[in-house]
Amino acid sequence: MFIYRILLYSDCTARDALNRFIAWCRVAKIEPYIILNMGTGSLEDALNWIEFCNGIGDTYWANLRRKHTGKDEPHAVR
Image (cartoon, rainbow, N blue to C red; front, side, top):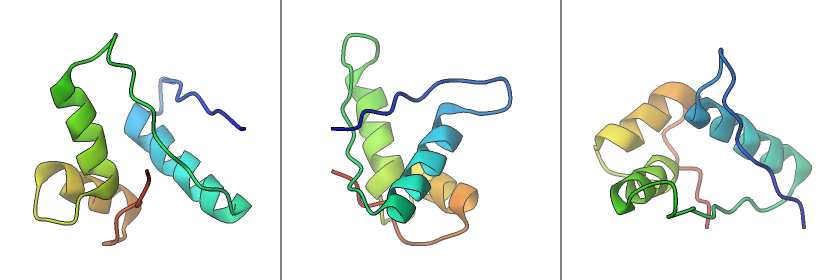
């Protein structure tokens, strides 16, 4: 099992890192999935991450993903 921890860098937000990681997974032909640590965040934070990755509607988080990736389709992670 390969585990990737999203690290914050001065020029990289967590969502930028997530987009890069998912793009790498697609190239490497591996299935990305998300594990949420509820000890350091809230249920709302977790739902926002899921909406960012998989949202298909006209929502803030789905639209932000579209803006960052330039693609309409969701990441479709588990």
